[in-house]
Image (cartoon, rainbow, N blue to C red):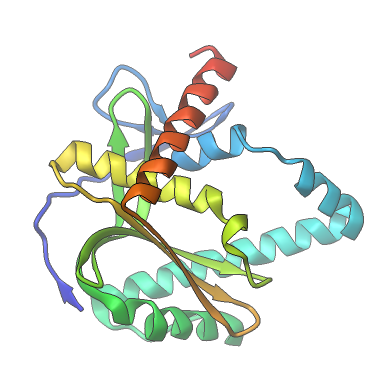
Amino acid sequence: MQLTTPYEYRPLERTTRPIGRHYVVDTKRPLPSVTTILDKTSDKSFLEEWRNNVGHEEAERITNESANIGNTLHDNLEQHILHGSPPKGNLLTKLLTKLVIDKGLSNVDEVWGTEVPLYMPDLWAGTTDLVGIHDGTDAIMDFKNSRKDKKREWVEDYFLQLTAYGEAHNNMFGTNIKKGVVMMGCHSGKYLEFIIEGDEYDKYADMWYERVYKFYEMHGI
């Protein structure tokens, strides 16, 4: 895995507004984050059903635990890519890190940047986990962890997230990224990888723009 710097990635300032996380960019107003747009335009009925089934206190515990694991996993992978650092955290987090390194990052030929800030003028902004070349093709890559093994039809919002970053990168740097890769370490010890490219990438890009327009209509922005 080769580290290169073909593009200049500049940091963006984060800010919190009543409707969620935003980023301050060189536009007239802060832009909503990709995750904020997805959150505000998602059907959350299944989440409410899950919370009712397991109990709100247990649901809160699981949510916080997953978030902590995810944050440590992302930090471990970033430090591994940049410095070759060993993973930190508990045994599960170290296992998840090793899964993604051995079975996911092993297919990455070139890294252009990690935790890369990107934005589409006047529409959205966010930070993607990894940009570079995956198995010979320019790609946006994202790291995930999951308590349960996921099926492909359950992760469509992840695909929308990838296309959001891909479209922003293409607009900012004149690239033609049409591939997104989700690298997922599951608590079962299984590694899952989901890839969209070509026509499927275009389909999810169209779906992403629909979600963006829905977000702005909902909030009258």
